[in-house]
Image 1 (cartoon, rainbow, N blue to C red):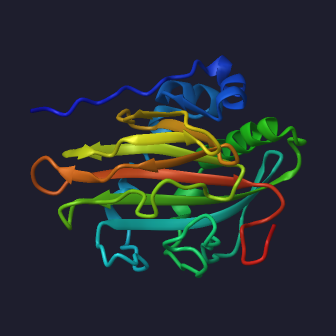
Image 2 (cartoon, rainbow, N blue to C red):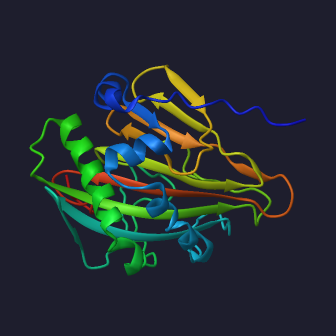
Length: 251
């Protein structure tokens, strides 16, 4: 029996700010991402090959081998994007009960990706969305972390969010679905952080995007299983935060 995939509730580009403010999340198709960020589909897909060579995540506490990733940090000020010296990814236990409270040093994003003009435009656009949502000056600094993830079925099952439904402790979370191949599962679930309301759907279109107001909603993705062979689900996750990176003791 084939799997029934619930389509995502797409937001029209002109309604993004209102939808994000009213509901706490919004989903854009790939064409809307390109139009709003000022990039082309070809520029986005030029990065696809990065996911085939991601190194393994060596910090999984469940002993799994199903996650591969790279990480980099940036500061966006107006239309300027500055890559910071490579740094650890850190979250408090409050937001990640499984992997919080420890420094995790992942291999960095390739320079050839992070120095592309399209990468700059993408981050500047996301910073602008965040500034609008938080009613901050667009010229103020946004502290950005970018993660390339591949979740595969090496272990028979892959867990996109082994920590369960969670917040990330930032202002906005952007989840781009880069590809999914030969899998079932990987359903996205978004819930009000302080209430019973929620929605579930499956991102399937390459370079479609889910944007989350991390102060209002929690999110998770269900495990994936192979249809045949070894399948995978690739995402680019970008988090944006005002006031500084999320370090031990930072507010």
